[in-house]
Amino acid sequence: MNYEIDATGRALGRIATEAATALRGKHLPSYTPNKMAELDVVVKNLDKAKFTGDKFNQKVYHSYSGYHGGIRTRSLSELWARDPREVLRRVVYRMLPVNRSRDKVIQHLKFK
Image 1 (cartoon, helix red, strand yellow):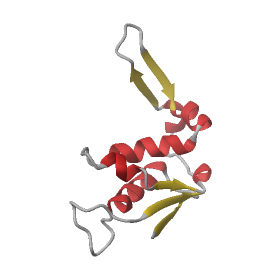
Image 2 (cartoon, rainbow, N blue to C red):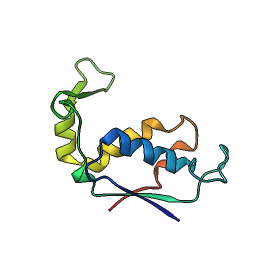
Image 3 (cartoon, one colour):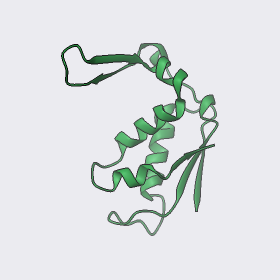
């Protein structure tokens, strides 16, 4: 079973929220928290998503390797230029509950 999301003209956070909810199966009448929903979430036209305000240029993401001087700072525009699918995947991944099934659930997020 597939659940399709069209990203044309929609904000990235709204797309991610809908995807995270659908991945867990909360939109189904048969939802149970301890069972994985057997469906794939397909996001179409991700390159046509919009950003509100000046987030596209001002928002920055930090990653730290654990070593001295090992902090990397990248802007949203850099990450989006490299791979928009990875940006959405990271956002949705952080919206899912932190448990053993999170890595399995995120594999059902697909892109067209």
